[in-house]
Image 1 (cartoon, rainbow, N blue to C red):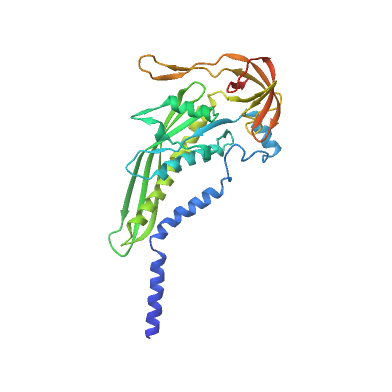
Image 2 (cartoon, helix red, strand yellow):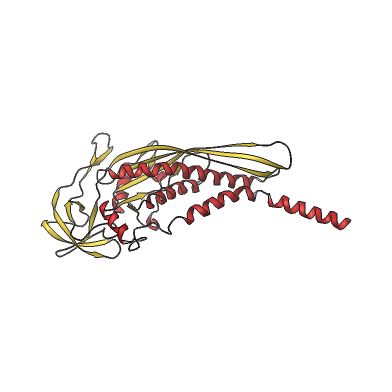
Length: 328
């Protein structure tokens, strides 16, 4: 009889342990696992070169060259002091844009700055941001801010195992800047929400609650960013594609864009000077960049590596490294 009581007690304890705080996070973990298993392994300039089938390649060419965009980690400007949420928001935007196969990104190993580094007071330091974009050779730069994160929880008040419904709401702002003109071209604000229901133990520890809240906030961020992806694409569609001259060797001109960017052999490119920064002489506020002077044209003749090309001079001359190239 005593052995039966011990066995029953062990079964009850096993059931209780299976419902401890760890189970609160299991749904979020499963969602993340399933979500990212659908995502290709990389999204940088050389990640999908040569992997598209012929029909896919033809479709990509019809859309024109892919624009290069620099996305900085978002700024978590909320009392929820978790930097990983800002990083997560930026990575989610890059992941969403990458899946459209219409953009390229510089290698993130070279990126040491984040959105917060370009904010002073309530203003974005546009001049510094544009210079960083030029350094990476991109067409546009994106910064973002998480402006609100709220949590709510309703739980039963009776029993050791209590059913709790948790919810999170976030607000995210995104700004896009055209590197060529040095101006802000788009600003959006989107919201996201997430909720779950789980059984929790009465004495649930604070660390488990914190981790569960972060997981829930990430789900809400993911929803908000999903709304920002088409906004970002719409803004980029209004900007001209551009690359630049990376190297000059005699009559050979080497470009920082090639096959992965979607250039085709025989494409004619205009060459322009980079233009000059325009600064208000009194307020010293950066106003943008002037349009560069047309120097001539190039013809794409050969591809090098995954995303570089060699071009021959078609018309004009006096080209220099750093000059801007655009489709004719």
